Picture 1 (cartoon, rainbow, N blue to C red):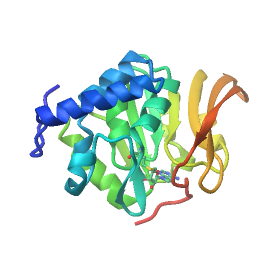
Picture 2 (cartoon, rainbow, N blue to C red):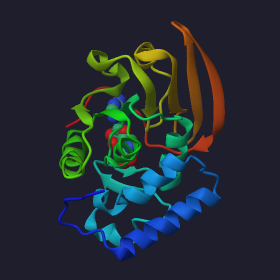
Picture 3 (cartoon, rainbow, N blue to C red):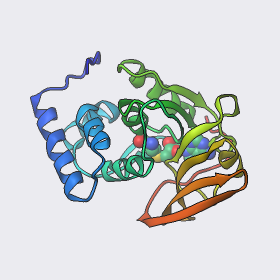
Picture 4 (tube, rainbow, N blue to C red):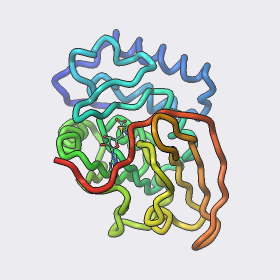
Length: 220
Ligand code: SAH
């Protein structure tokens, strides 16, 4: 993969990334495409320079506007639950740093991502435009989805949702999958819903996670 950023991606970063990927594999991440994407995308590009040396620890970080870049394990876990095939259309809610967006692009998905904080939307746009990916990014409210590009094969929500937004289910293809952490406060259950018809879905539950909240409307 060719990269064009001024921050370098040197052997030290690549070595740390390899170690992180081994750690994630040991924690149960098996999807080879997820592991390959995590080996290729430089996470340190998405963090403030002050965190450069810790970019490859399995921890979350502040990215501004009171938000966080998800822990690498969470990114890997959600990406794996999507069961992505190349060329699938994926809607992401909560662009944040843009790291999860880049991972989905590296897995050859067509990615559409929405962020409600303008500052984060603009930062992610700058970083992602310097990488060899071409996601569509929007500043807006993820509760509403992105009707003009629907239907989607997959939907991933990277903030803690109070419930499953109906509009997002409507914009999902029958047979499609939505991966969504649902719950209030600091604790969410990771759900994978598979749409079985216009108004029904199968539900699987995958353990506890902690996300920043999914909030309505936009914020400057
Ligand atoms: N995928 C991101 C995770 C960032 S944290 C990453 O890898 O960095 C979750 C993000 O969801 C935050 O940036 C937050 O502002 C955003 N968010 C919260 N509610 C939202 C909504 N209704 N629509 C779009 N984005 C939302």
